[in-house]
Image (cartoon, rainbow, N blue to C red; front, side):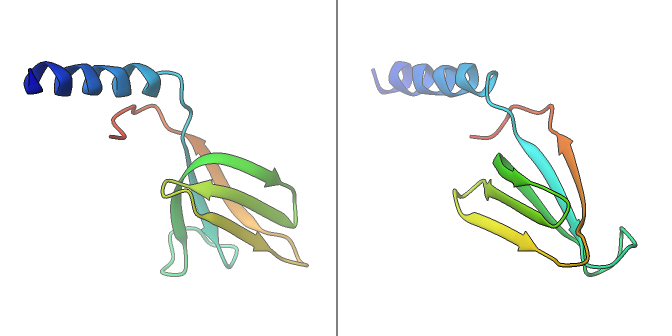
Length: 85
């Protein structure tokens, strides 16, 4: 019985994962990507996306916010993989 319950739970999470969109966000603190100062996040939801302001929720449901007067350097990519459980 425990095995069936566990398999149903895995199937349900996989099925729901097909409809959830995740984003890979790379934020650079200078104009060059690939440096040691870049930070990469996996995001569930992007709340604000403007030239000087980026606000989103990460995988752990933490709110991450970046603001800059001179403009931000970031890349947002859609993730195709649905193995998030």
